[in-house]
Length: 431
Image (cartoon, rainbow, N blue to C red; front, side, top):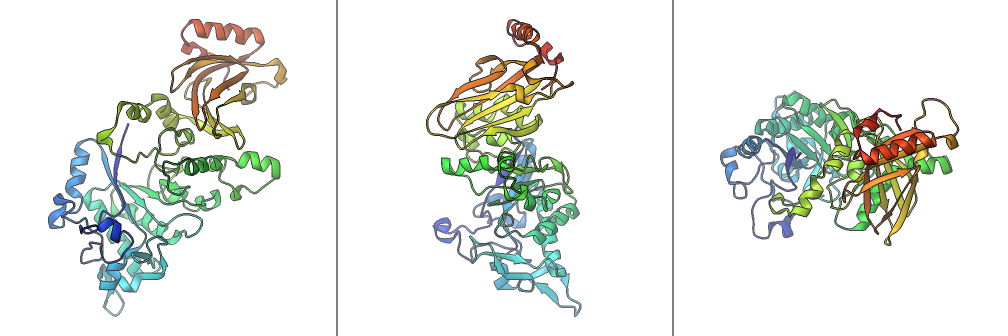
């Protein structure tokens, strides 16, 4: 179920002819209040006139049963720095007011908007109070979600600002989901420094509808394979699941999740890896096929309620992810074909067994039955799951499985098939 609607990038830019093409990375176009804080331009957002900000829009969104978010940039706008706007409630020991120039770190500009946004000295009283004034204002508007951009990733993490914003959200008196972006090159070691301060943090660059961007997502789950082959260090690779960083408690409330960016359709990595699902597009113009992809009940169940999500096997041509469902014996298995040509992906199910008593592997059999999530094709297998997958394609199986002797699993599988995948199988041994 959709919960959040997020207003993206540059909502504070003044409405001018050709403004986006000519000024997206040019200074001087940001609309700010007298305290140097960004405001939506009433010419673009008519309901915000009179300094009301996004409060009227938030009220309408809340009335629909949804929550409202906004995208914000690192630090402070250079428009405020140039104008030396005072900081709300911030005075120096000599009685003079702190201003934007006092707190600006001009050598910590956002790499892709160097003329527009720079860092804030959060060790100063003025810097702390400026950040607090920002989030007090967002709270007064009724904002529920913050996407904080240009603060995370391996090349230029702004850890002090992240910590200060996390505190400001808590002090604002309004719960807000706190999300970091981007995540280029982020490792479990870097993520561990912010995970408890936020609710979401990106671990990829921006996603576009191009395979070269999507395929990089699978590398967040290769640590187990590489570690066993080469004894490499966990923090050098991108397996956030095996690092124990998925769904840990956050000080801003709720839990903290690894974010694989917005959802280009056809990709299943995000839900099976328990990444928050973010759709970038026009919801008013969805066709039925797209809507069915967004609302597939099995995918939403895996994303919201599965456990033990992990990369089970894989190589440069294919990957297999598995996760456990809420019922005993319930398991989800996702096959991904990373090559251009169709190929058959095979998974020995016996390797997934959680044994209650030690036995020889050859004495145990696994019988599974269920269906494939997209096609709803019924599936019934013993010991080995194999499926032909289209080039750059994926399949997702929802299965109930029993473990036992050859005779036990044969009868269990026959019973399961003829009883239309009876949930009574949940009473069997778990895998």
